[in-house]
Image (cartoon, rainbow, N blue to C red):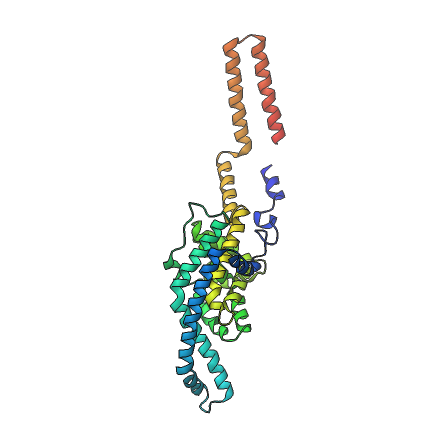
Length: 331
């Protein structure tokens, strides 16, 4: 019987729709923008980060244009050809972005944690047993697939197209970084994180060569791709993108909670239940054991009244019939 159930019942991953939690994750970063505008607490947090970030970025950009633009153009072409100036401008923009991100990292991290938690509380999903991600972990430079992300970072110099390529290559790991706040909130182990993202446990190196990492049906990859696009937007992307993407991650997490929780946890619970049933001898054995106890109880009650009476024989007969009938229905 158990074999028939296992054959006729698909796994949880196959039984759900194309998007495991109901909605296409690629739209969460866009939805986060309108969500921030419609909630004053989130809006002011985003606005403060934007004002600080833009001010710092402008100051850094002006300083680099005055001090580093011409030397870099001359290093590219001593005759200062027009294309040398163009490349130098892209380099200055890239350098200004890197310096600004480093200088704003602490304030951005605080803002991301604040808006993530606030969004989940607004949606009524935040629980007392959840914890906020520590700043030390958030500011850890050794992100997922760190080497690949560093090697592909120069693609960001190319406006729009470069950002899209960078996002496509690192989509799964960008999405993982943003959803890490939710994973930390529910204290999900690293092993189960990999199971949730790749379908089974993989190291970062093996994941880079695994088709699941670049699968269009991979919800984390779809989410990470558009998060990367938002953060690659010229000028304001690296200022506002990380904060609005934290709201997007919270909205994604809320839908996961509303759907019943992460698939990896549901599958683990199902496996634990099957293991427990197997250790107890299976559901039929448990039912048979209960039936035998019920029969013994019925016989003891009947014996207390009168072992040879008609009521005694009647109770014994009905108890046996009930057990046989129940077992036949279950099988």
